Length: 416
Ligand SMILES: Cc1cc2nc3c(=O)[nH]c(=O)nc-3n(C[C@H](O)[C@H](O)[C@H](O)COP(=O)(O)OP(=O)(O)OC[C@H]3O[C@@H](n4cnc5c(N)ncnc54)[C@H](O)[C@@H]3O)c2cc1C
Image (cartoon, rainbow, N blue to C red; front, side, top):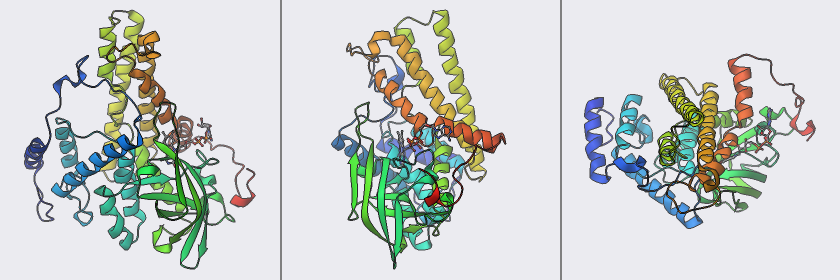
């Protein structure tokens, strides 16, 4: 299918063309992918790969996105101006469902951040020139872009961040440190939020930029995680000079830019195929012959009910997004529910496995669960911790009184 502004296929017509396009390129999905003992038993939440393996995985994903994008399936609901197909969310949903019938390359956080979080943020806040330069590049995954938000002293309290950016003529000079920057070692660009005015209230003194990760003075140091991989990094800025054309949004508007990116992140969580699934958990319980135990049956039923409720919640969030509403606090309920489900699946698997989760016996589908168990807590923190999501729900959904604040006044005067 070619991207033609005047051509809008019906959903049925689109589905037929998409199915044959996919069939020409991909193998059908393995019916046996959830059959116990067959295929890969990987249930990891985060990749546990060497640098080269992770880079190669990302390359494959980027190439696949480029192929899809050029055929009109990579940015289905995006306007033609950005290289999208200009079709409806229904077309998108149908495409995803058809693609799941095939063995498409898997996923990666940095890839999703680039196409799903940063491309729409640049569309919202970028100048015409920035939109021209970046949106299509990011949507097509020609280059990846990471989030340079958190700092050693600013995570939940992101608005307290201290990396400084100082204007120098038509340039800006950045100094400071970011941390937990997922995929920074593979990214060509980073969305940076930095403090441009320490003399005003903390939310008002930040400015956003798009930073080339190979700029002189940017240093990326990978961090080793307890599960073995190195998904995220420390990023240091030493007198990094950025042209004003790389500023994203107005001076002092950095908080608004950050909130938009975080909104896309929370609105989008809840559907990722990471970690062990309900089907795999049930397979494990059956293989261990534990489904007849009343207490275990209750636990399995609880996991199943949670997964079903979560899928209804996901549909609600999707319907809200499709009606054109900007991402709102309902993303917090979606994120909490998803993480709770991930945690519950891991703890029931650990209970089923007993000692097998601590030492590899070589049996298919057993020790592999240790990767799920060690990875799941990361998502209780990433994208805003559970406690912060609950604060958002309390204040913005339930209308409860806000937390006591001791951080009013100029950022530079706040005790740290
Ligand atoms: C897997 C993963 C990937 C990440 N990727 C990125 C990335 O790509 N880019 C990026 O910039 N950052 C990233 N992060 C960082 C993430 O956004 C922060 O870790 C998160 O915001 C929490 O901040 P913190 O680690 O500083 O913890 P803190 O803010 O120090 O929190 C410590 C504890 O105190 C609790 N707490 C803090 N404030 C409150 C409060 N007001 N009320 C109640 N409880 C509170 C928290 O819930 C938490 O339990 C990632 C983190 C993880 C785990």
